[in-house]
Image (cartoon, rainbow, N blue to C red; front, side, top):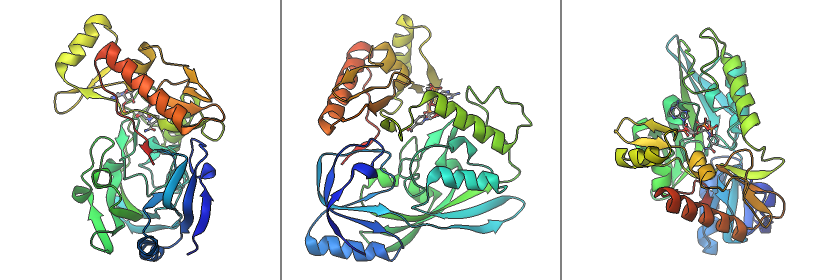
Amino acid sequence: MQLIPDFDLRHCNTFGLSAKARFGTTINTPQDIPALLDAAERLDLPLRILGQGSNVVLRPVFEGIVAQMAIKGRQILQDTPEQTIIEAGAGENWHDFVSYTVANGMPGLENLALIPGTVGAAPVQNIGAYGLELADRFASLSAYDTHEQCFVQLGLEDCAFSYRQSLFKREPNRFIVAAVRFALPRPWTPNLRYAGLSELPAEVSPQAVMDRVVELRRSKLPDWTKTGNAGSFFHNPVVDATTVERIRAEHPGAPAYPQPDGRSKLSAGWLIEQSGFKGLRIGGAGVSERHALVVVNHGGATYAVIAEISDRVRTGVEAQFGVILVQEPETI
Ligand code: NAP
């Protein structure tokens, strides 16, 4: 394992922000993890693991070590009439992995197609799209526990998944995920609950569902390889019934999706658009003209400008609707 000084992070984040780390390196095998932790302790520097850097906003300088997760590998561990269990290395590209499972007769992850990032990052925020969350297909994972200084196996209960939340967010920097195992139930049934998919016929194939998800995402969301971004920039807020009533008194069409706990999830994108921020531009960054939930780098965006947009949107939505938005990408 080699530590590269003055490590350029521009190509390690989907926002395409210019940033440097004191040192950078790559994790290619699980055994690299304890070696890397030793090095960080010896140098007395903080350590951050990045996957594809698809859910981060980078400050210009990180005074520590950034390690890119690159552990690869896919392996079927169990194949029965009830389920397939497949394991993937944390450094596998998420969409490539989803495509591989669908193309090889192991459907179940198709609603999560085209989400940027790596397999190892997926459990951290319990990625979700089109009515499916990672937790719905999760079996277990292997991670290095930096507190106990050993590898651990964590199951569904251990990971404490909830809406875009997990153990890994509640205890940041404690676990380094090395591999994730997915349980794909048989027989496969399509999940066509969300608009855009509900128009598909009931006898649709997994590949056709995946193709539609890809088509929907491409039509709505800016492509980070062309216009840097970190996906949804705010969580959809979950609010009480009184708040929904208050908002709907003025905006009868306001989207609100009832949750099992009696509260309702509002659409952050709708709130931002109604507050007049869609298409806002400051410096080289802005709120996407295509989707108000996405903050984009039009070219030359800086951390300061992204932070200013984040503040302006949060303050504006709170003033207009009395709802506090929480930023989704983590600032490093
Ligand atoms: P949309 O159709 O504009 O709807 C806005 C929000 O309303 C969605 O985020 C979704 O919440 C919620 N929603 C829509 N239909 C729903 C239903 N039938 N039941 C419950 N909640 C519903 O959504 P969009 O922005 O195009 O996104 C489509 C999907 O892709 C969503 O699931 C979204 O979460 C996901 N997505 C995720 C990211 C990311 O970076 N995390 C980025 C883009 C899109 P949910 O978020 O809870 O699904």
